[in-house]
Length: 502
Image (cartoon, rainbow, N blue to C red; front, side, top):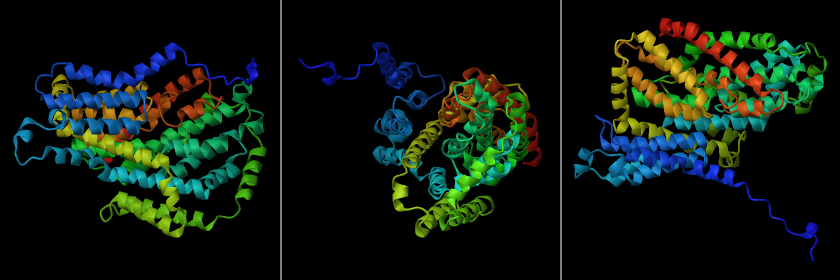
C-alpha cells in the first residue's frame, strides 16, 4: 500500500461555480455579438454598420472582462470583420462595384492600424522606458530626490511626486513608471519608520507615501501626451473621428495650469486629509544615499540615454512640422541600438511593448472602422437630436461629466478610451456651437486623472491597493475626494484656460 505522502496528489479542481463563472466570462463577448446581430437594425443605419458595431461591442466587452489577453481580443475582432467583410465592413454600393476587390480591401483595412504613426510612437516610448530600466537612470533620479527631500514626510511626498514627474514624459506606461520604478523604491521606505503593511502601523507613513505615489501617477499621466498609453490611442481616435490633430506641445499647454496646481498642492492635500503619524525621520536620506553609492557614478549609457530622451522631447515639442513624432522616437531607438544603450535582444524580448503594439493597432483599426461604415455619423445625428436646444457650454460639461464618471465601470483606461471616446466625440460634433478642439482637449486630458477614483482605475492602482498600506475603505474614500478635486480643477481652471489660449 502506498503511503499518502508518496502519492502523486493532483491539485483539487476549481469549484464548479468558479468554472462556470470563467466559462461565462469567456463566452460573454460572443453572446453580446450574437444578441446585437439578431437585434433589428436601428432606423437610419445600414445593416453592415450595425453588424460591425456588434463585433466592436463584443471586443469592448472582451477588453473589460479579459477572458484572453487584450491583444488576442482585438486581433480576433479584426480577423472576424475581415473574413466576413461582405456583411460587416462594406456597403452594398461597394460590393456592387466590379472593380472593388473585397478580399484585398479587407486585408488593407485589417492591417491599417499597424501603419498608424501613433501606434509606432507608443512602441518607441516603450523602448525609452526599457532604456530607463536597463541603465538604472530612472532609479537614480528617484533616489536623488529622496536623498535631498526625504527627511520630512511632507517633503518625501514631494520627492515621490517629482520623481514621477521627471519620468513621465518618456514613459508611456504609468504601470512601468510608477509600478515598476517608483513603487520598488518607496516600498523600502516605510520599514525605516516602523511602518508595516496590513498593520495599524501602516498609518505611520506607509499609507501616506502609497497614496501620494498613485495620485502623482494619475496627475502626470494627464500632464503629458506621452505619459500614458491610452493618451496616444486617444490622439489617434480624435484624428480618426473628428479630424483634429493634437500635438505634444498643445496637450502639455492645455493641461499646464491644472497640472502645476495639482503637482504643487497634492502632497500637501494628502498630508492634511490622510496625515502620516511620523513627520520626521533621519534614516531615509541616509538609505537613499547608500543606494546611490551602490549605483556609483553615472554610466556612459545613462548619460547617452539622458541626451537622447531630451532630444526626443525637443523634437516632439518644436520639430513636429519637420519630423513626425513617431519617426523622432524611432530615430532615438536606432541611436540607442547603435550606441549600445539597448541591444536588439532588448527590443525583441520586450513583451509588453509588442503586446501593446498589437493591441493598440487592432483597436485603432476597429475604431476607424466604426467611422468607415457610417456608425459614428449615425450616432452623432441621433444624439444631436436628443440634445437639441441645450447650450454648447452646458452640453460640453454634461458630456465631459458622463465621460469622467463612467470610468467607474472600467478597469482599463484603454477600454474606456476605445469604448466611449469615439461616441462622446461624435455626439459633441453633432451639437451646434460646441468648440470641438477645446472639447477634445478637455476629454483627452482627463484620461490620467480619472484613474484615481477606484482601486482598479489605472494600471498601477492594483499595485498600490495591494501593497497592504491602503485599506479598501480608505482607498474608495480618498479616491472619491481626490477624484472630485481633480474634476473640479479641470472644469473650473483647465476649461477656461483652454478657451482663453486656443
